[in-house]
Image 1 (cartoon, rainbow, N blue to C red):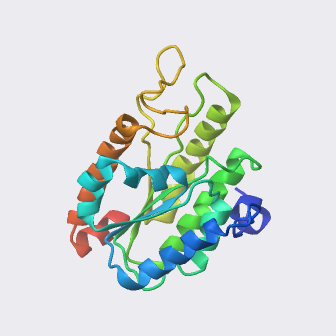
Image 2 (image 1 turned 90 degrees about the vertical axis):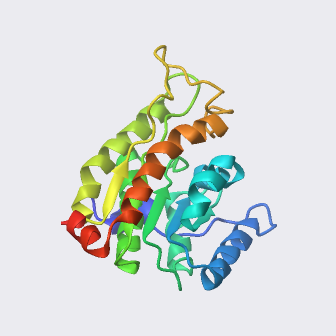
Length: 229
């Protein structure tokens, strides 16, 4: 694993406003403002996979009751999330758990670089929120049929599975089970465009994640520290 300073996927940068409407920065500014008013126990941060989750009933049913904030922005890469977190999206909040889900949009980077970018975000979260646990969700398979991006995402997950335990406060959660059928295809019942999840797809992801979050939140501070050893 190369150092973060040599990894382009671990370089913080905002999204270039090529369309000229400043939508990305407006969303970031809104999140920073939310940090001043909210007291979340759970913070979700990432790309559209995080952002779209709150449009479905599963968010209101399983995650809103946990006092969760959703800081997802469609199209974000590890670089964009890193920049957002370094520029105000962690100020004034002390969540007990942070759920990180990003990386599938890092098209210019290798699997090892993407995993390194995710690791850099996890390190930032741990250094900024010393009492929080970080749950990193594995990248999902994508595309109706087997393709190089599926292989790349699977490789990212293997790096994460190996690297994250070294951080102590971070853990990897595989939520990809059941999406790829025996013939290698992905169904539109799970991913409407073979990337973004349907309501059914989000329920598949939400069950193991919800179970883990409840487990972490029910731990006493002493138990939480012991589980990190």
